[in-house]
Image 1: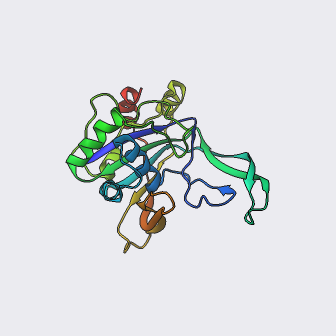
Image 2: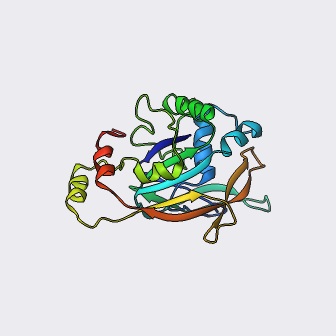
Image 3: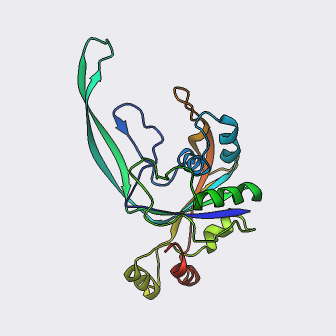
Length: 237
């Protein structure tokens, strides 16, 4: 079973090495970021490692329906204690984010769990955000009444309606004979030749004990078809 979500926002940040004064972002949602969002929707406490492990077992697949533009902010924090504890200092940090990105995020796994996720996404326990609290969704993650489908993640990526909301962009793509292909990042088995390692499989979000493991993904692409453009006109609005 698979559940397709729409991740659309003016700003998104999916950090994977966000330590110190430089806070990075990947060019698509990370497993830890997506699991964190699901945990917020379902009201899972950050110290509940067992509940976290259940949703972290879901397989993640992402289709990039609009590549975002990577931007950088400077943040100034005053009165930060020094490491010696003898005074305070001002810290300037660099924080990267994606502007105007749009993703189809597909979760694959147990149908009962996906049904619970679907219900929680439509009535979240805590506010949802894309990597930072200020980066809130621009539109619903799920259309009303949407439920898990009996299809593989790969099939959803190849057939699900295009999520682009701009009428002008949609009309232009309808006229184009040659269209850009949509990049996909799909969780895969580690023995595949083109598997890439990502250290973003969450083990614990507990305060002072955040832990992550590695997983493997495969990067590919799918064609943007006429059927995907037409089907997308009634989605995520």
